[in-house]
Image (tube, rainbow, N blue to C red; front, side):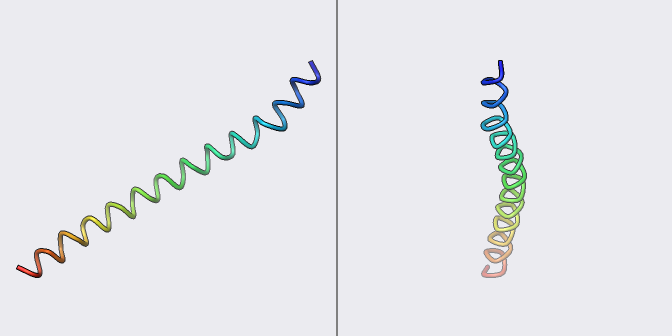
Length: 48
């Protein structure tokens, strides 16, 4: 049982933190993508 607790402490916590950080980064990357797409649309409208 103690081996399982060590495994969860050594592996589980870093995995949980990694998933949390990836989720936060994903949201920010999506926001950047949306802004860049809108910027592209605005610049193409200005060219016309």
